[in-house]
Image (tube, rainbow, N blue to C red):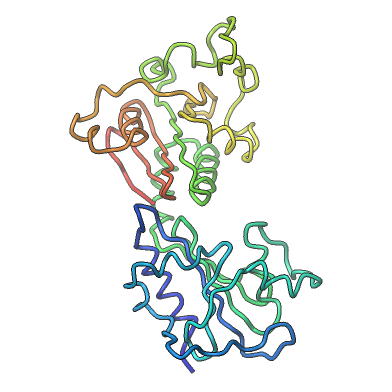
Length: 310
């Protein structure tokens, strides 16, 4: 009997280092269990079935077969890739059974799919995390990065531990949803005018805003801080085009602001990098910058350079 869990982890680890059309890979697999159950019969083995192993990752279209969120590769007891399944349809057979512990909605079906039969589900998320589900709950998670060290560097640079944790957590959530965002913590709040356009500073005197202008909504977030804004609300605000800018204590200075054109960035770098990365590099001359790219990566910029990428 092959060690299917070990083989599946290896497939996902290799996939985590791969991109497809400049996007990080999302995929998943359901290992058919050895315990007899009434809802799902053992899948037949197709004549030309391939082993679920790292050799599959060399097939360019392999990563397009399933997205890990809605669809999964089904692997038989013999370790062969036999079918593609919809995880929600698979889990529907156990809809009447309670989950042993609460789980996040995104992966509720993955937990439910393993309630009976000894099935095991493994998922590779957009930020490179491997989640393993068994017996109706998540039993393991593995992020093949030095995330602890990178978070420690970010926390040390940010200064305020609560602010650092709040922004890092929000950034990871946005990365998993593949939502781009930009967070700037200024070293000196008086330098905000160097990167924030006129009219975008929340502390500026209240004045009539153009009809339909974003400034008309400034009152909703004026005189508040990152720690007083609910994380879910902060995620929503971060999805607005532009950057969220705060001071070192977390006081919100601007949101949805299109940062001023860079002046301290090498023109060759600006020509090759995307607009968000160029803005992050420029803003990092005035503070600490956490950037979320739409391919699911989180990057930390400081002092005009990228300190790390997760």
